Image (cartoon, rainbow, N blue to C red):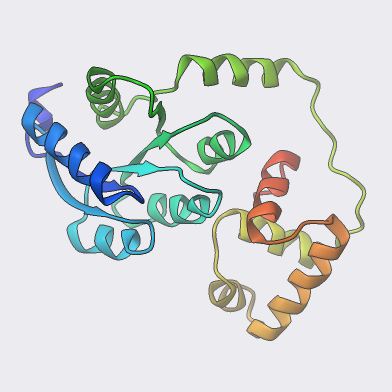
Length: 213
C-alpha cells in the first residue's frame, strides 16, 4: 500500500459479529489502515455518517444490501465500497452497476484482501477473476431491448429512482407527490413487471437499462 494511505479508515459491515471482529483484528494487525468502526447492515449507514470512512468493506449477504450500497456511495464524501461475497451472481453484477469499487470472494486469502483494499483506496477497481469472465461473457451478448410492458413516463421515472436506492419518502419529495401516490404507482409497476418487491424491481431496472432518469 502507498504511504499516502497511512490515515485511511475502513468501516467493516458484516452480519456476523465474530467475522467482523476477525476482519478488524487482521486488518489492524497488518497496517497501515485504521478500522474506524464495525457494524451490521442495519446500523451501517448511521455508523458511516458518524465515522466518515474512506472505504467500506461490505458483506453482500442478501439482495437487501443493494439499497445500503446505493446509500453508501451517495454519501457526501463518496466513500469507496469493496464488496465481500460468498457467491457470484446477478446481485454482484447489479452492485457493480450501482457503484461498488470492487468485489472480493470470502474464499480469497488475507493477502488478497489487503491487495484489494489498497487498490480500491488508490482509485482502482478490484474484480474477482471469475466475475471478470462472467462480465466479459455478458458484454459479448447482444443488447436486450426493454420489454414492452406499458409503463407510463411517470412509472419509468419511479423505476429509475428505485434502482438508485431512493426510499418512498425521498421519492415523494423528489417528485412532489404524496407517499400514498408513490405506493400506488409501485403497486401498479409490480403488477405490470411481475416483480415482488423493490429489490426485484431494482434488478429489473438494471438489467433493462432504465436505472437513469
